[in-house]
View 1 (cartoon, rainbow over the protein chains, first blue to last red):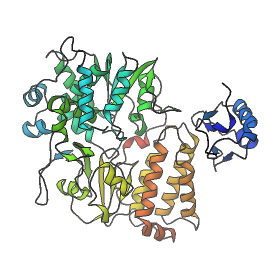
View 2 (view 1 turned 120 degrees about the vertical axis):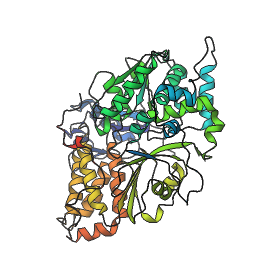
View 3 (view 1 turned 180 degrees about the vertical axis):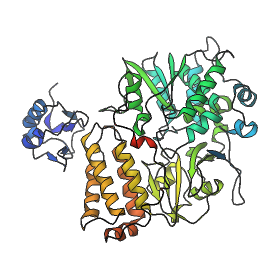
View 4 (view 1 turned 180 degrees about the horizontal axis):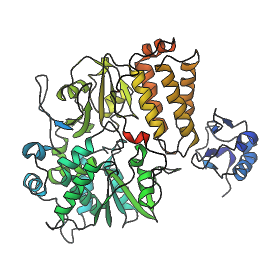
Length: 76
Length: 440
C-alpha cells in the first residue's frame, strides 16, 4: 500500500543517528539541528508538497536512521 | 539499611506491613518461616485450565499496578502475554539501578520467597518456560539473598519452572526493560529503540515479560489472600501497599512499606526524619523535587500527579533546610549524564551540557546567559532518546529550577554556593566513576 503523504510523520531512530545532517540540509522545512548537530523534527505530518523529498531523505540518510511513520489523518 | 514501621502519635492508622510482615515478626526470611506465615503458593492443580484466568482476574480485581516505576496495570500486562505467543521468558527485575533506592535489597533479604512465589505464579499463568531473576552485578548482597532462597526451594519440592540468577551490569539504565532484554539476548545492556513500546519485547521471537520484584511479591500475596484483602488498605484508585526508600539528612536510608495514599510527611516521620527540611526528592533521580509546603500530599499516583510529581522508583529523599538543592541537583545531573548508555546524541551531549550548566550555577561561575541556556537545553533534550533516561533528568532538573528558583537566581548573580564543597546528601553510586564500556 502506498504511503499517503499527508498521513506520515518523519521520525529518527536516535540510536542509529550520527548527526550527518543530510536530512536538515535537504528538508529544512521539517528538520532543524540542535546545538550538537542532531536532527529535531517538526511536529505534525509531512505536508504533501514535501512528501517526495521526505522519501528521498529517508533513502539517503547515511546511517539509515530515518523512517516515515503513519499517523492519524489531520482533521480537515 | 533499616526497615521501619514504627507508628507515631500522628499516625492515623497503623502502618500496613504485608510484604515484610514475616520478616518484621520473626526476623527471618528463610523458606520455613515464609511457609509458616503465608503457607504454600497456590499453584494450579493438574488439569485446571482456568487457573491462569483466575489469577489474572484476581490481580485485575485487586487493582495492582506495576511497582517498578511506570505504574501500568499488572493484569493488563499479564493478559497481553497470555493471549499472545507462549513459551516465553519471565524476567524478574531486581536491578535497583536507582542509587537512592534500597527497596529491592529489603525485599530480597526480607521476603525473597514472596518474590520467587510471585515469579512462579506469573510464569505459570503466561506459560513461560524459564525465569531469570536479574540482580545487578554491583548488588552482591541482593544476589546472595536470591542464591540462598533458590537453594532452599528445590529440595523443598518447589519450582516447576527453572529459575536462574542473572547478573547484568549495574548501571542506572540497565534495569530499563528493553536494556534488560538486550542483555538477556546476549548483547550489551543498552536500551533499544522501539517505534511501538506497547509491543512485547522478544528474544528470538519468544516473548519476554519484565516485572519488578516488588510487583511479583504483591501477586504472591493477592493469589493467597484475594483481591478484597489487597484493596482493604490504600486508596480506592490506588489500592495496597508499596515499598519506599526513605532517607534524610544524617540518617541512613530506611525501607518502609506504606499504604498508598499515606501523606509524604507522615512517611518521613515514620522513618524518623523530622528536622526542618529544605525539599524532598520523590520518585528518584528521574522524579521531581517536592517543596516543603506540599509534603502533606498523599503518596499515590493521582495526588502526586496533581503537584507535578510521581511515585516513580519508590524513593523519598529529603535534604535539610540548609542544603542547596541546586548543588545536589548538579551532582545528580552529573551522575545521570555519566550513566547515559552513550547511544543517542541528544542524551550523550545534552545531559553533560545540562549538568555543566548546573555545576557552573552552583559554583557561581555562570554568565548572564547560563539560566536561559540551561532552560533551552532542557527543552532540546526532552523526549529525544531511545529510552526515557534523558526525559527523567529533564523532569528532575526542571523541578529543581522551580522549587529552588530563589537559590538559582541567587547563584546566577555569581554568588557561589557555600554548600558546593560539602559532602552530598543525595547518594550517587560509585559506578559513576566506572570506566565507560562496563555494559557487557
